[in-house]
Length: 395
Image (cartoon, rainbow, N blue to C red; front, side, top):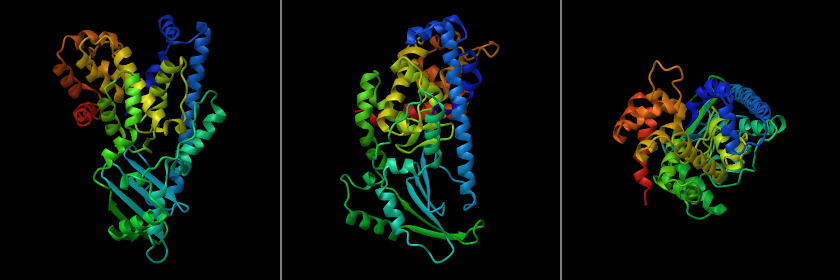
């Protein structure tokens, strides 16, 4: 995901985002209409908006963790591969792990072992709109962004299935859901342990997800991938590989950078750049907008297009440029440049100064250089994972 880019973005990008006439002119070429003074004010408004975004997120996340820790010994939260949800005043915890392929339900009880069937049935029938509504951090962040940050783009989260489509190609009726829930409960692994926080007992059940969850996840998003890959001139297999690597097709993927959805869009980087490219104006994207798969894939593919065709266009070999664009999707074009620039250079994040070194290398040399010299281990592994996965989605 693009989360590693955020620290550099906040420290570097906004401080020198468009102070020069050259950067201002680029923004006019990109669609911004107005004087340089108006652009300076516009830039300040964007920065102010993201400061509000961060403050809202920090406050809501802190409250969320505090509420969890009143009941649980550890505050487990959703990430890009795991969807974690709490119910019944936080006494019920559901964890769907799309990477390990497991579903775990835990219940804090002061009495006998609970009946897990109603909880599993609820999980099987839950859709993305319901899941969003049960996530206090996303709901409250969305609400406050719309109230405090003018121009925030939000959306109504579409009620798409999360779990049921992994078990059935067709919608299931109530009897079928009941039957599947009982089957999963009867075949689960169980454990229990004392709860230090409540003095009661934590009862747990774990069951495996179907083995073909990634195939079904790919089928769900393929229409959007095909549409926007064509629009933004990308290989659909590349986009699928990015989605797999970013979220394992977890529709409720979230990282507290923040990054949202299938392609783990960071509003402060990909969101701004993609909206400016598509609409001629940088817009702040709320969680509700990015939890809709079509919106998420559209923004993610637009951002990858920018990386390949604009930010890294000076890389002459197409394969070398692809390697760099994959790495940049995770860690930012500036960090890619950093890997090739002279360590003594004043601005080591400058792509233009890195071009001679990149263009002097073969594609294999570029790949190996990225693999060994990107600043962060996550980014070094990311290029291997994405590029290695493309073949699995090539038709």
